[in-house]
Length: 136
Image (cartoon, rainbow, N blue to C red; front, side, top):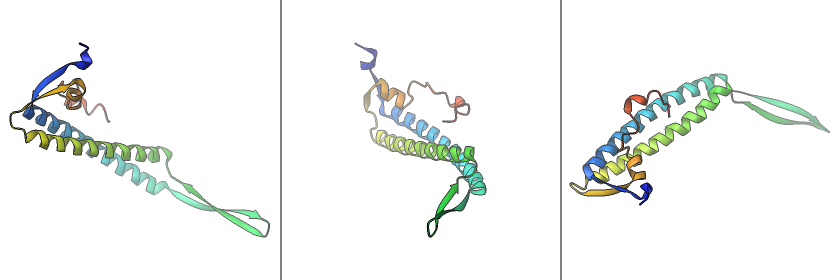
């Protein structure tokens, strides 16, 4: 049997507790990215601009609106933070839902494959104190 085909048994409450921990992790990350997003939006708001460029044509002129998105690094960070914020919020919502689902099964045992074990971090591969070093 290949290692990828192995299954592991966990009690429903163990899975629910793990889902809760993972949801809390993603909620903390969402809070971090909300602050990053707010900071970047503030910089972009203070540096953004627009101008109208007129171009001569026969019989008059045409107008082109040129948008300056402000500080390029802040604009990039704003886009990155927006994606991270929504990714972490979605992960937290999904995990909270799974937490509630598994809590409905008082003493049931589930067989999980290795992908599920990693999804719920039941192998404890991500240590909570390491999260501040990895902003993702």
